[in-house]
Image 1 (cartoon, rainbow, N blue to C red):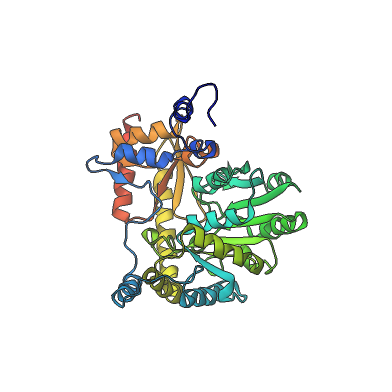
Image 2 (image 1 turned 90 degrees about the vertical axis):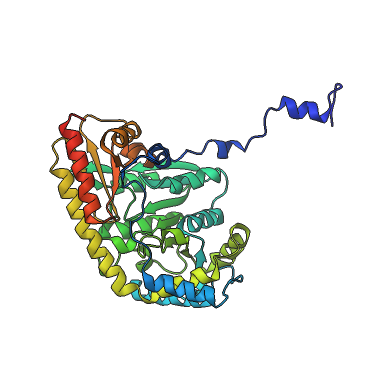
Length: 403
């Protein structure tokens, strides 16, 4: 009620313009987008900044979705995904991880980022403590901030040309007061892969303390160290573990624009996941889920070919970068990115913008992924070899001119 002669409109004016809550206003703006926006419209720009390849989704997946659309599959499905897709996903996961996954234990989401958001909405309260291995895709660490949680970063470091994790440092950061641990392996942007010998100690530590472990497994099929059996915690975990796996069709099947992902969570969590899916997105489009079924049924030969292709391009790019004087490149063990730095350069956003203007080269700044990768640049190698070679030639000429 207005007092001292003031009206309600007076209070509205005094309060200033209408604003979002502080947690939303404080979210970091994507520095990858900042750099990309600076380069959009530039002629003949060699672009390697986004996390997607330059080839479309395979025809057998597109055709399955097109047929479903032609058949009129445009209605709502179950909140947690169409029955045929969840069944196909259960079969796929069982073949990959060597244990049974019931269709009722998996949920289909509108992309990997939605899977991460749903999972964290299910387990985090405001003020909860979250530990994340960084640098990492910024969405992973901004979601806890959206939910008003507190974040501790445990940084990877470069040692002898390879990004590594100090497991003792990570375990020390996870205390009885920790609610959730976030882990992305293979990692975006570094290509780091959690060593197999570190998985059981981390899971056991979380078990002892009753801490949730949420793994972002979107690159699990692009692990160049163990192509036959991806190093997933799902292989080690029990159904009652506080273990959640978030995944996506985006990277392993070239389906970035489809926005189709999934969650594997303890059975006790699935009712709440269903409710949260209803309140966030209801369900993904049915005809797109038909494409997901085709992707899973044809996963074996297609993904094997893609992984071999990307491993060869990783080697081509890493070797090419290492051959340029003044460049330091870290060799990735998985994913689709090489991180490198120009000796003497410490501000990656400014450097990325200079490379657009001076070299015709579009790269992602390392600062976008955390302070641990500031000064570095991320190059996505999921591209045709000719395009990659063109980019390397431009970088080499720029370096020869003195940068």
